[in-house]
Image (cartoon, rainbow, N blue to C red; front, top):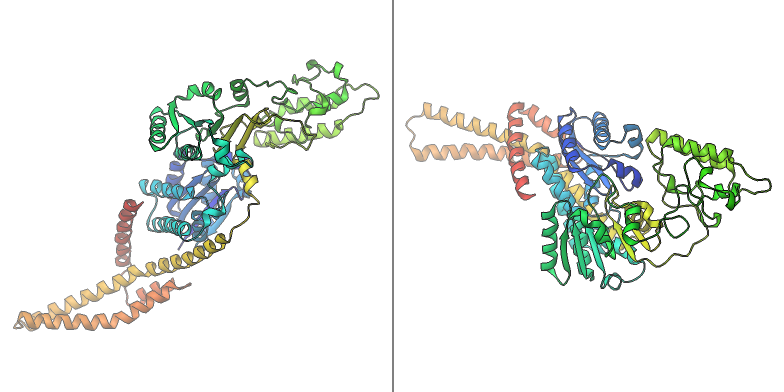
Amino acid sequence: MSLLVVGLSHRSAPVSVLERAALHVDAQVKLLQDTVAAEPAAEAAVLATCNRIELYADVDKFHAGVAELSTLLAQHSGVGLDELTPYLYVHYEDRAVHHLFSVACGLDSMVVGEGQILGQIKDSLARAQELHTAGRLLNDLFQQALRVGKRAHSETGIDRAGQSLVTFGLEELASGTAVADWASGKKALVIGAGSMSSLAAATLARVGIAEIVVANRTAERAERLAEILNDAGDVVARAVPMDSVPDELTRADVVVSCTGATGLVLTAEAVAAGRGLDTQPGVGGVPPRFGSGAAQAARLPADQVTEENCPLDLAPVPSTAGFSVLGEAAVAGMAASELEQHAAWVDNAPRPQGTVALVDPLAEADAIAALAATAAVIGRVPERRKPEPVAEIPRPAPSLFLLDLAMPRDIDAAVHRLAGVRLVDIESLAEASADAPMAADVDQVRRIVADEVAAFGAALRAAHITPTVVALRTMAADVVAGEIARLDGRLPGLDDKQRSEITQTVRRVVDKLLHAPTVRVKQLAAEPGGAGYADALRTLFDLDPETVAAVSRAEDSTTDEEGRGSA
């Protein structure tokens, strides 16, 4: 077995890296095609979800395979190999099988036990089959992973170990209130009509949302989802085009977005405008790009701080309300030149004698310079949504609830600073679920995975010798046929009954001689380290390698057809 998986997930990489590495469908197709075209790989499949990107392949060389798959992931994700490499993990042979089975059971999910991953694995297999990049190994592997996942959900209470991502997100929005009580009577806007958005819409309908509006770029899909929701229960659902989102935002209580778009679907400004919120700093809106301006206000009295003081036109706000640049993410996305310009202003800003700085100018200038250097290397300032701890500012109770299930994100992270708005996204879900208690059922699922990995490995090793055994029996049958033909030439007077009896006797002798060795060699081959028995059998009986290969190709073709039918 030469199974190799190279990937990254929420366990190995920060959300910011996963966002940038996310693969849309076209990129997945190209990645699969390029992988099987590469020298080390014979088969390939991609498992790409909102919190993982994994490339599975059947390779003939481990080190060359790791190098090639890593390079291909970097090329197609658009993240440089040097930056991506620290976040990649590699699993090989039995460890790769164990990893996929664990993923299928929900053990490796952001929310343990969620079942949506099974549908994503099924979609990955179907795509590989459609592109003919999945052969015997990956067909067997992914189909068995689906069976293992279903077994884990049916035989254990793994579902109780964690909720689906949608349900967990709604519970986070409800913030301690029963979801049904929180959802009762609310109006929801669902942006997108794919599998995740459809799941979210169905979940919203089930928990008691009164009205659901579906917005999607493809009108037919939005209308179909709305029709299904209307037929399914008491909820009132309707479809709207994407350009109606700003209007619907004024009426919605809950917004769920998962579109797969490459850019933001809802900016902080759009949300503020849709809800009539004030975006001026210090008035419950979005803080300025460098937070409260505490450092600026520390250098000049409030009546002397004007927008002209800063080359970036950063509006001043009272120093008691703000964030320091040392911990504020409002600088995320700024160009390095802008940061350097602001650093110079911070360093040289006039400060009346006797004024005590709240933040050391040199320390802040150094921090900005460091951020500028980072921006120059990776193209943007790393985002840190959470500011430094500051004095709590009273916020009104949320009137708009946003759930962003997209990767990369659909909703601007800055909206969490808008008054009356609560945002839950993939990053905050990861933080909330990191310390979730592991149920006893998880241990039972782990035992199931271990047993299934052992059985799969044994079956795979046994299957590896099957073509050789078939070729041996075929050779034996040819020998019998040749000897019977020679006997007919030497004894032409045999009647049909005599000839049949002799033929059956010879065949029984050959079968009995081969039975014990072939059964035993299959048993030995199924054990760890049993791969060499096929070579020994071919050598002992002088089997033609091409005959064995022909049997393998025939079996692979049959398996491929059966796999496409069952996926």
